[in-house]
Length: 64
Image 1 (tube, helix red, strand yellow):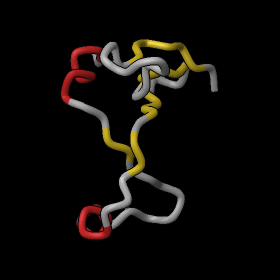
Image 2 (cartoon, helix red, strand yellow):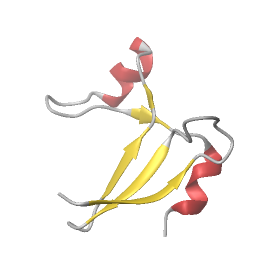
Image 3 (cartoon, one colour):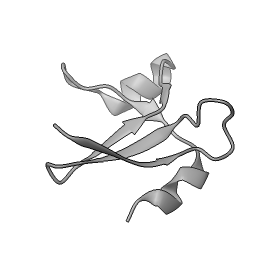
């Protein structure tokens, strides 16, 4: 998978994380904060092999 950097969080210093990447497979990779709240995870009901990350609203502008 080839990742192309789209945007880092302009308000996060010094790491610009969360970060959004576009792949060469027609998908996105989102780097964000680990969701570890038990109630939120129970609501998501994530299957094996999946995880959830949180990003701020200000990052949505970078999705096209």
